[in-house]
Amino acid sequence: MASLVQQQQQVSVEGSNRIVAVNVTPSSNLHTPSDYDGSSNNEKSGWRKFLTYVGPGFLVSLAYLDPGNLETDLQAGAYHRYELLWVVLIGLIFALIIQSLAANLGVTTGKHLSEICKAEYPLFVKYCLWILAEISVIAADIPEVIGTAFALNILFHIPVWVGVLITGFSTLVLLGVQRFGIRKLELLITILVFIMAACFFGEISYVKPPASGVLKGMFVPKLGGGATADAVALLGALIMPHNLFLHSALVLSRKIPNSVRGINDACKFYLIESGFALFVAFLINVAVVSVSGTVCSASNLSAENSDQCNDLTLNNASFLLKNVLGRSSSTVYAIALLASGQSSAITGTYAGQYIMQGFLDLKMKMWKRNLMTRLIAITPSLIVAIVGGSSGAGRCIIIASMILSFELPFALIPLLKFSSSSTKMGPHKNSLIIIIISWILGFGIIGINVYYLSTAFVSWLIHSSLPKVANVFIGIIVFPLMAVYVIAVIYLTFRKDTVQIFIETKNDPEMQTHVEKGLLNDGQLQLTHIPYREDLADIQQPEWGT
Image (cartoon, rainbow, N blue to C red; front, side, top):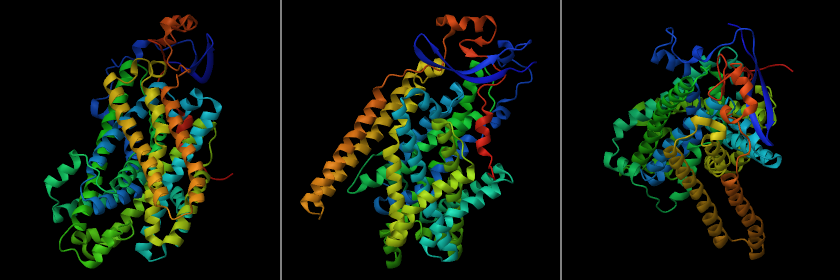
């Protein structure tokens, strides 16, 4: 059959902005809807079909096992035992929902989240969202920088600040290896990360945390003294804004049959894949919290280990695994931590590329992009590592996680609105149940952020040792910024969408000619495979030279 020529096109119909995913130029022999109804005798079996979709969910799930997650998990267990396990549970359930929504958005529209944001919002709002998205990539890179520096410190006993500097170049080495096969590299890194998972699972079998305590912490929400900040950091480490941009773009690298059944199957398979990957991530996070909580609350804890638990960081957490690994615990722990940091660097690089391409229609060479964001992330990490040492660097991870949590609404709210909109998704929009659950969870997280932001700042002002004049000056600056934050969230929530992506052919006379020519069926452009974006697939290949 002859091929169909695809070209992106924006049209204006009846004064409203509408985006038609692609413009189709017919050839002499067009495919008919029956070619794509999934009735072919050569259709793959269920498992074989599912395996063709595997990849994006597992790559995204690596971000839920990055050094930032490990740091917040360790500290949540050490300081609060199992009290914050419910945050991990809710966080990863919510992560599954929103990651599947991001995948569905890309599959249905043929565009990823940042591209739709660019089309939907005014120029000023678009650039603000772009800047916030870039900041989220940098904030996510800080734990990777510090985690890698800690791993190098454990392995080679070099100062943390020197390790921070080295991480600026480690990313270039990673991209160099990537040229020999990205899938092989991802598989190797995933195996190394799961070494850490096996270690913590083995440690659980040794320390035997009380099942009642773990289950109570998982299903009975509680926030004791000082737990709010750690809960916000835990959520920030679990649910990252840049992951939403990333997942909606990664799914566009797969060829999906252009039919209602084809799109529904793709959404189902991506949900299954994300569910399995995030369930594994959930078990690992629970294992880390449980081991940390059990070991640090043991009655026979040595004085040295007690001091480490009181100031637990990624750099001194290897003692938690001594029961299983003995003398080799620090080495195995450091290798897994190194793999965790570098695997997360891959997801951060891809997310940054898609964000820049979507908002600005620009693509930067991967090594330049990765080096730029890594060098920006190095600056605060290096300052904190020099001034505060390893404990200060550990706190920097917590602060970065909190920044991610505060920035989440500016990626989450557009995703929830777009995926629930008939103008964007047509018949594939979210069901009423998913809309209710996702918005409740979303505003729950946003409410926690606003509550913590306001109460923590007011408490700091009250107990600050600064002169009253300085406190007044800081309040004049910060309180308006807090108001702007709330107003921006309200604006994104209640602003009416103006751009239409899904075209209802029955109600659009101008599209009827396409229907008569066989180019459209049930309101969707009829292509051999949709959506598939070769321009986005190129982003995943390292580019070298000028």
